[in-house]
Image (cartoon, rainbow, N blue to C red):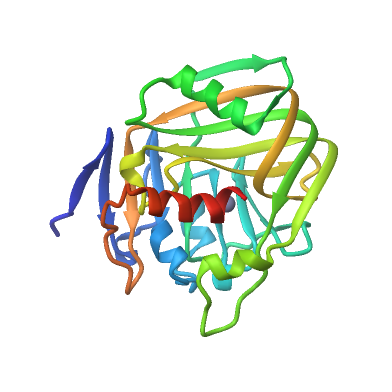
Length: 262
Ligand SMILES: [Zn+2]
């Protein structure tokens, strides 16, 4: 079967359907696997398509959400966790499904120690400075100690599903104080807006794997930073989800900023 492909910035994208996902595929290096698009999630397409067993075949590191938008997903060292609306982290079984997730087998090309305190904005500019340009896509892991981490989760939704903008009006927010744990995230180029969140998107989980969520702010004390530069993206499109149309307008960026960063 011919496979549709595209270039998004420096990222080579291959489009798949769920029936094209076969188990036991060899581990691909510096390759992202994503199910669905951020645009579809914004529109309220929260029905889980890909199972966590299928996801685990395609990456050991990443983020996403759950069927019916039941929390924030974190994948780290091959383990999958869900931070539910109570702010607690729960282990996820292979049969649960996700409507939106992005994972990779994390293989850092670059590692360094951060030993000065910084907030999220400073961390993002530091990362921009380290990786340069804005055409490429990166997976980022930061294991550290934090003065505070502010996170949010999302409550499970019922049909007919409201838009994500509607859901986050009632998002539970958590302040974790004097905590150690890991930031797990990605940077996507502006060209990938619609496909994923352009810029940085982080989730957090504590070292004891008890709490976390989608990151809104951090006060980092010190940590170990690792970056994996990604060259390819395999994108699985669930039924009813179309290829994203590039939209790099300010209105789109502001809508996403409101949903993902406030
Ligand atoms: Zn998130």
